[in-house]
Length: 512
Image (tube, helix red, strand yellow):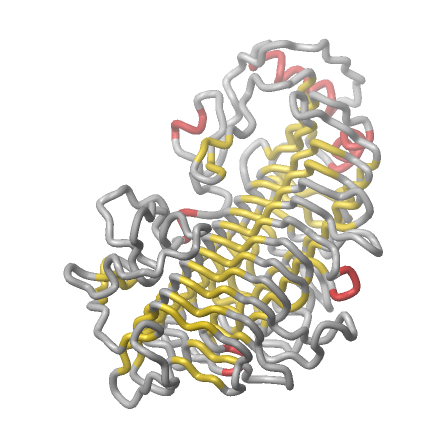
């Protein structure tokens, strides 16, 4: 098929002529240009990203296409969605569109249904509501969304929203993207820009059925910015789960996203279910915290919290059981209490009670983190009645010039401290009395290297970790840890750095 034939098909569609495309096994035409992409992205393939450091091959022009459907107006777009079938590539021309829903449309891994802007960002959905219901292997790519209605993924799997720009028109409370319904799983929201949210509601909410959260969804490489002003509740950048289904497991992964000036809800990300992972994200000048509000067995690791001195900036807050917090870097955060750099909070119920209560912390493991120049670093039990139980704080570097570096507002039950380094300067104090093997009061010799602090040559943190935590296999930079590990989030190493604080160019629609 040639470009000339493709143009002819578009002309016929505009004329209202029905076109039947024969199945094709190879798409050899020059690909449509993608606005903002480099020349290498126009060579017949779409840029790859990575999953855990491995290539994640995205759409390529010769992958699984049976039909090319070009649309130039709203009627054609809605007709194409209604008639979508496995192997369709629906190409949306520049312009403004009213969108409708699609139900029972099923692509396959080999032959997905793809709805893609001819030029990234120039096909604008400014009216209507998209609900993808009871469908699978459907991708929406490169569109600009300014409409007034929630984009819903209902009872579907392997639905992907990638390289879109979301700046919805708000008149009242509005969630922008919602995953919901029974049998929802393995959906992905990646490489999008979400910005300028001023009303209540979340950028992204993952729910499910009445009893079970949607499972194995992934939110990655997105840019979230400018949400606020601060609200009392229900204005998160991301909410995973909800109170009434918080006993279910989501297995959600939220990774490699950038949050800037996300000042809405006190919880920038609110996790409300079991078995979820939040890793490798960067939070810059954002008021509030990453909160494990309900549920158990959460893993928060490899995140960078950079407050840059902005009022109300915080880190991580925990409730529930068996959480792991490691390899995180907390710097320049000004919050305390709910917004402390790390809050192992008290609970208002113990092991039973209302699902929307604050459940007591049991067996939290906080290891190999670095805290630098925060107003309040590690707080324990700032709120509510029941202090944390059987938790561990080990192999962390904590430095600061004010307050207590370790602040037990409620005496924890059977807390283990081991292998930590505390360096109190200015008016700060260590805050707790522990033997040297639990907390050493020595200068860790941190120095600024690039955007964050790392341990320098001769640091007492080098090779003095307790080595008890086998799940800590690398450091905040992705450098491997082996043998006797270093204390803090940074392992002094000559290995390649594979991660770090994210910038705007690392995420969003035009990132590689």
